Length: 114
Image 1 (cartoon, rainbow, N blue to C red):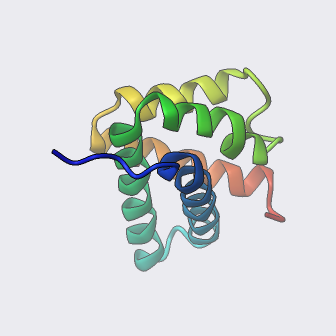
Image 2: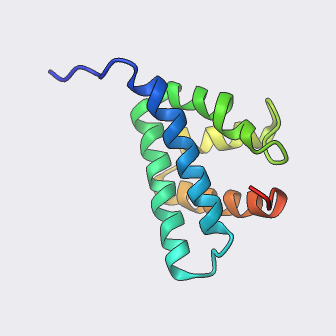
């Protein structure tokens, strides 16, 4: 039986989430490029995997630490924030990838200096 590493989620999830989002924002600034689009697809898969693996803990990290980093897109308790969290938990992998790429491209448009 495998035991979880103490403190793993508390330390790892916020750091991993920030890194994935920053990488996605950089790639989304050139989403018409095939390599950037492929990277966005991979990053969406990683975010979705974290959601599946960590469940409610990942949702708390998204709502409490990651999404509020983009205040023009995700205001506290906003419809956009709830939609993102819902898609992480409920969308199929292909649907989440499509949703994530669209959302991250909108983030770049709204918050271009990130």
